[in-house]
Structure formats: structure tokens, C-alpha cells
Image (cartoon, rainbow, N blue to C red; front, side, top):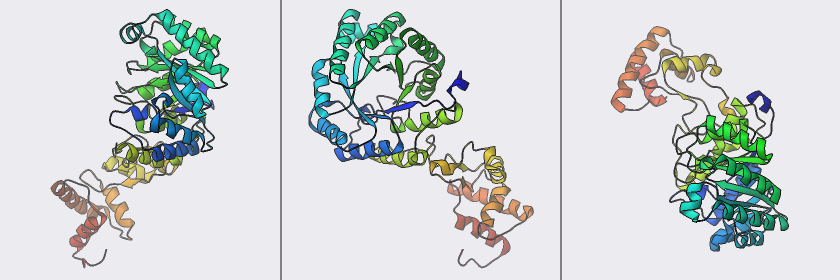
Amino acid sequence: MAADLMGKKIKFVDTTLRDGEQTAGVVFANHEKLEIARMLDELGVDQLEVGTPVMGGDEKAAIKTIVKSGLSASIMAWNRANIEDIKESIECGVDAVAISISTSDIHIKNKLKKSREWVMEQMVKAVEFAKSQGVYVSVNAEDASRTDMDFLVKFGQEAKKAGADRLRFCDTLGILNPFKTAKMVEELITKTEINVEMHTHNDLGMATANALAGIEAGASYVGVTVNGLGERAGNAPLEEVAMALKYTMGCDVDLKVPMLKEICEYVAKASARPLSVNKTIVGENIFAHESGIHADGVIKDPSTYEFLDPVELGLKRKIIIGKHSGTASIKARLKEYGIFIDEELAKDILQEVRSMAVALKRPLLDRELISIYKNMLNLDQKAV
């Protein structure tokens, strides 16, 4: 089925400013919210879910500011399935609303303490009111992944009949795997013929995989957050989903990819959640090579161990000189300084490099490597 997706445009719905800020302990200042919205808009994200107006106060003020900032992206606000919530969103001037209500029996009975009939009635009333106000409507089936399939289909059918523009399939607890996701989404789309957005959580580490599975099954929208922020283990990361769609499924990813690192770093600082060096797509070390075999391959032809050019992501390739380096790395690094050595000398230097790396418990600086080289040849240790 993936071949059918070649060139298909998947629309990105970024919820960093809503679900992302719901990460335990994360709060964005209003100016940060505006800057993140501007960056996402420049990146090319189709729709921004920017918050929950019914919270009032700073939340509502930030939403109004974003709405007035002249962005190209659609601006969506999140609501419970009640008319008062939606009125708050309309007052903010957003052009789209997300109407969310639980659909699984465990939520309906234990959280809402209502019935399936009540859920359906509330959803329909909310959708009809929102459409009467002229806004785009996404109906969110919360806990869709644990919802009885017949009821979920009926829910989707009634949502479409009421005027909903799409259905958000929420794997709220992150409990699906790609195989079950694909099966559920394909059945949902076949029986409802409604546009579906994938909204996946990462509790089992499969948010990106489940999002892709849903897209392969026919979903045309994908919900993401920068750096995978979100409740508990987070949501599907924007940067992962975008590059996976492009490189594994051939989809049309109409985003300014070189901006990904910049926005990921900004959100990391704003959320006080630093990026790890091995963070997928934007981590400092994803184009770093130390192992002798790997570094040798990359020096000869980068495509041996890199499937994309780091320049595309605004990153640089790094050959690390350390315990696991090989002679090819030693020669290549010294060559950068106009120093050309043979294989035998490279082997001798490598032994010293490994000993020093173990003693220091880190890779070597270029100055340290050149110092080893000069010591080997009893050269003057002045300026490197």
C-alpha cells in the first residue's frame, strides 16, 4: 500500500501549544507561544492547535494574539463537546475547532458516568453548533483505540452527518501497535468515508510508527508535537513523522526541513526539556561517527552509513577521534591540518589515542590528537 502514497500530501496538525504544553511541568510564556506558532507557520505546518480558550486568562489572551498575527496556517482551538466551550473559541477568532469527547466504554462509564447515547447526542449538538458558526470542525474520538469498533464507526458516521470535516483517531494511552492501528483505521475510513487524523501517544514507543500505519491505511492528517512533547511519554514527534513520511513512504512533505533543528531547539529551551545528543533527526550526534568501520565507510562514501545529507537538516557530519576510532579517521583528521601520514604511523598514533581516550573517558580534541602526532615525531609543540 505504501507505493500508493508516493507524492501524496499529508497535512500536519501541530498541537505543541495544546497537548505539548500539557506535558507535566511544562508552561510556555505567552511570547514563547507566539514565537512557536510563527516558527511552525514558517516551517509550513497546515494547522496549529494553539490551546483551550475556556481556560481563560493568559491562555485565551495568547490564542487571540496568535489569531491576530496573520499566519498562513489554520488556527484551531480545543474544546469539550459542549456549546459554551465552543463559544469561547469562536470569541477568540479561530477558524477551526476540535471537539473532543470520550468514546471508549471505560471512559464513558468511569470518567463521564454517562451512556453511549449521551456521548453521541453531545457530539452531534456541538458539531452542529460549531458548523453554524462557520468554522472547520475536527471531532476527536478520545480513547478511540479502546473503543468498540461498531460504536466508533457509528460515531464517525454521525459526526460526518452533523457536518464534521474530519475525525481525530486518538490512541490516547499509546497502547496500539502499527498492525492493529492500520486495521482499525482502514475499517473506520471504509465505513465512514470521513477524513481521519492520526493522534498517537508514545507510551510504548510506537507513536511515530502508529501514525505512519494510520496514514498508510488512509488517514490524510497527522497530529504531532515538536520534540514529541505531550502527556506522559508524549506524542508523535513532528520531526520524526515528517522525515519518516518523506524517506520511508515517499509522501510529499511540504515543510522547510532545514528549520526543524532550529524549532526543536527553541521548543526544548522553552519547555525546559533539553534535547539528548542522540535525539532522532535533530540530535547533535546523529551524524557523528567514531567506530572505525563506520567512519571509514563514511569517509569513503557518506551514503554507506547515512541515508540523507546532514546539510538537509542544517547539521554537520562529525568524525569523532576516540577509543573506537580507526586509522582512516586519524589520517582524515590530520589531513584537515595539512598533515599527511602513512598507515604505520597512523597505527602508532591510534594506540596512543585509545589509551588517552580511556584515561580521559572522552573523545580527544584536535589539539590533543596533533600533540600525540608531534610527540611521536619529536616535533616542536608550539602552535597547532
